[in-house]
Every structure is written in C-alpha cells, then in structure tokens.
Length: 321
Image 1 (cartoon, one colour):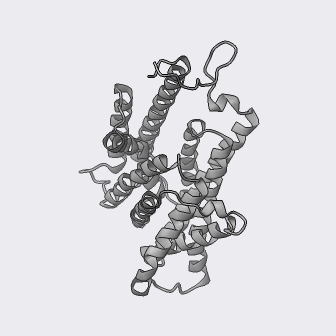
Image 2 (cartoon, rainbow, N blue to C red):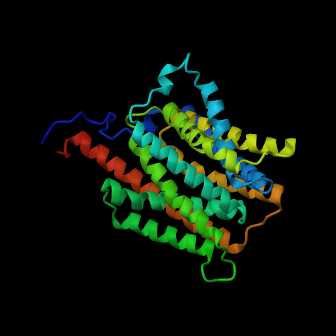
Image 3 (cartoon, rainbow, N blue to C red):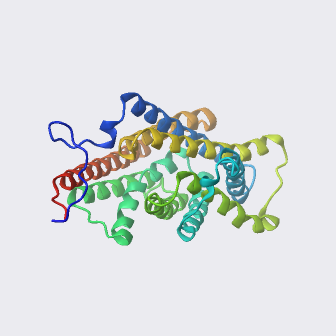
C-alpha cells in the first residue's frame, strides 16, 4: 500500500470533515450567503422575464453579461487584485463561458413562455444531468442509489413538463436543453476548481460572452425605448454579479457539501416573486414535479456526501492504494 497523508481525525479516530472543523458561526454565515445568492438569482430570472417582454432575448443576454463583466472588473480591480485575473487553463475557461451563453439564452427564451417556477423546477434537475455527464466524461462510477435518484429526477421533470398532455408547452424543451447544456458548465467548473481561482472563473464567464456577442450587436441589438427597460436590462447584470459574488463568499465560509441543500430556497423565492410580479400560481403538477426533482437532488447529494466520507475514511486508514 502506498502511503498517503491521512485525513484529519479526532481523538476517537473519527474522520473530521471540513464542515466539522469550521465554527458554527461560519456555517451559519455560509448558509445565509448561499440562500441570499439563490434568492438573488430568482430576481435575475424575474428581471430577465420582464425585460424579455419589451426587447429581444439577445438584448437581455448581452446586457446581462456586459453589465456583469463591468461590475466584476470593478470588484476585482486588476491593479489591486492582479492575481484575480490570472487564467491557468484558457481553453476550458473559454469553453465554460461559451456554454454559459447557450444555457442562459435557452433559459431566457423559455422564460418568455413559461412561469419562472416551471423553468426553475426543470433547472433543479441539473445534478441529475451532471451525474450522467460525469459518467461519460469523467468516468465516474454510479451506484444503484444514485441511479435511483437519477430516475426519480427524470420522472419529476416529466411531471412538470407533461409531454403529450394538455399542459405541455414546447418551451419546456428550451428549458430542458438549457439544463443539459448547462450541466457541461458545472462539469467544467468542477474540473477547473483545482487550478483556477473563483475570481478568474467569474471574470471569464462574463468577459467571454460580452466580447463574443459584441460583434452581433449591430445586427440584433434594439435600443431600449424607456428608462424602465434600461433598468431591467442593467438589473439582470447586477443581480447576476451579486448572486455569483455571494456564492463565492458562501463557499469561502462553508464547504460545498454543506451548502448544497440551501440552493432549494430559490424555489420559495421564485414562488413569491412569481405571484407578486406576474400573478402566477403554479399548478399541482409543477408542485409535485418540483418536489420529486428536489427530493432526487437531495438524495444524490446525500449519496455523494456519504461516498466522500467513506473515501476520506479509507484515505485516513491507508486502504486506498
């Protein structure tokens, strides 16, 4: 057996996880920051839906990334924070940002026809497709418990979309395609997290789309006719920046395995905003499907967390060659 550095353990020989080492106050701060981040994303989708009722989807997408890049450049001032701009793996970073363009565009297009609770319910299936893509591209092994979570999650998506039934809308396919493509973004984020800083990934995910879409602006950009439309467009970028920045702070305060379940607070935020702004009330199928999808996501998260602990225990005892 090759010797490896043992994972930390307490006096009783139990494995000490990252969450266990952090003070309770840090975990609480991390949870609050994560809930703030996903609630901010609920505002982002609401503003994008409102803006999409006034201008073309291209305008909403471009302004969302353009404003986010401008704000991110101010937050991570290259003079004061030169390290924040250091990119070690340019190719994967650029690919990740390009994927984000398509995922965002499909989501914003779907928002033009669906309730934000419906699109979010489908977005919650992201862990399912991330797991499936991990099998294909990362060679991960998935046991029967996670396969159960995948099957249940897909069932939940079918309940929300109701293909072949009266409540089905073709825009569900846009939302689902955005989730599948966006799962590639999550896979690349996981791969890049070992070599790239969170600040460089935040900058690249906004800079690349802003620059790539700029040459298309003369053909597709429509000048907003009033201050309200400008406010909505700028608001999408502001909420996008704030949400991602809060998420960075959350992950600095607590490990991802602890924070994952708090993302589902976004559904409550979307429920409130959907009713307050659009007067929309989800039907029973949306509630049921969302519940199934969220349940499957939590099941997959629990299994991944359990496997992580088992691997840490094996590493501590030297059972991993």
